[in-house]
Image (cartoon, rainbow, N blue to C red):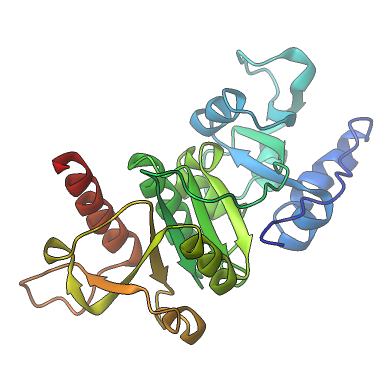
Length: 262
């Protein structure tokens, strides 16, 4: 099914301090995140966003002697040098929350005026996080991901999303089949590619799916074979191409402009 199984959480609150620190460090690695259904959220801004979301929080690790407005039953205190080892940031490892991955949800047909992003083979976690942020900015509440996209709970992706991960539902699975089902239910498919019609000249109809391919190879052959309408970002300068998140932003702007003009 087009879903991600969070797995059984194994994070035990009764762990010894040393074991708890080791359990947090384990979450640096994808295999442990997937096995335990847990991930890290770092920094005061993102921890605050996490607490205001529907995500469940297991613990918040902070420096000894520091004061925080968080529920006391969630707080765990450690020396700063231990926090630096527990976090993944080069600096500023002051607050590290452990959160549960949300339960997977079925992919429902799009609402009449809805626009969503579909990501095909996005490999860079920074790009993935920024794409979630773009989706959030333009009101896209769902993002579809192929199975070979980088994990949305990668710490770099979580940071780059700037809290949008907590507001945008991510559906992961076999992308061509999911796109075909959405189109059969009435959605228009648009494929971002340099060879496409300039977006300003295209009639962008909703409900819509904007498909964005991998940074180095573009959309997969399976996705290309669906026959989605190819659109591009018109440009005049000499740059070879746009970053995938930059292209997404420009195209989402045109989707928004045309929706307002209706």
